[in-house]
Image (cartoon, rainbow over all chains, first blue to last red; front, side, top):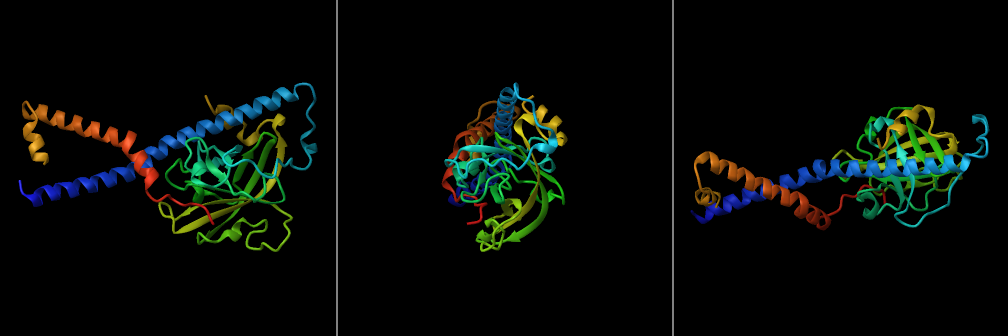
Amino acid sequence: MTVVGVLGELLLTAGVLILLFLGWQLWWNDAIMAGQQSTAASDLSAEWLEQAQAAQADTPLPAPADYGEPVVGPASYPNGESFAVMYVPRFGEGSQRRIAEGTGLDVLNSEYLGVGHYPGTQMPGQVGNFAIASHRSAYGGGMHEIEQLQLGDAIYIQTKDGWYTYRFRDFEYVTPDTVDVLAPVPHHPELTPTDRIITLTTCNPLYSTDERIIAYGVLESWQPSAAGPPADIAAAVASWGS
Amino acid sequence: MYGALWRVLPGPVWLRIILMLALVAAVVFALFTWVFPWVDALVNPINVTVE
């Protein structure tokens, strides 16, 4: 066999290996990690719900109208600590993810986390901007279906304190250095916020990292953990882990 | 290279095809289980944040 023949076969092999790697990264490993992250989120959600219901056993719950101002948790958490669960029905079944502090690869590429909170941005329910990031494709793709969001779609954030219901408002497409989208009033760091908003950031276009797609939402309502999940997702949440 | 492997494999053509497929499956398994996770940690990370 000639040298050229062997070289040709080696090059063909290299090409096949690269395609295999991309297939592994974008679909195989993505699907496995999505399942693991989803299960981890379900576990955390159920744990908080049980704790809240146990603690609530003695005291009667206020009427839904009297939940008052949203409870806001600590201003920050140690890097990598999961403090919330995100569930967006539009993203489909199994799309629930843990939200952990920090947007490093240790959070975003984690097999049980997947969504990261930008340190220094506000917390769920707080006046200002609760800003989070996740992969669009690969590593569980916590925001894979982001472009499917429609005006008014619910974005549920659960913490140990309760459920925060945000409603999707609009998209924005920006360059990766547009950090102003994280400001308490996006693009206006000098302004004092009055709204409670959520900002989702991920890659755009799909399978590229050239741009970022930003999805903004506004807080609609809040209910304490002991009240259980919002009625619209009660059945979905109950089915998690089964 | 692959021609030599084909000649080394024993048995009739149908058995060689099965052996070939088994070898490919074993290689893909090893790649998916050990090699690709290792490579993944080495190559440029996929950045999704604004910074």
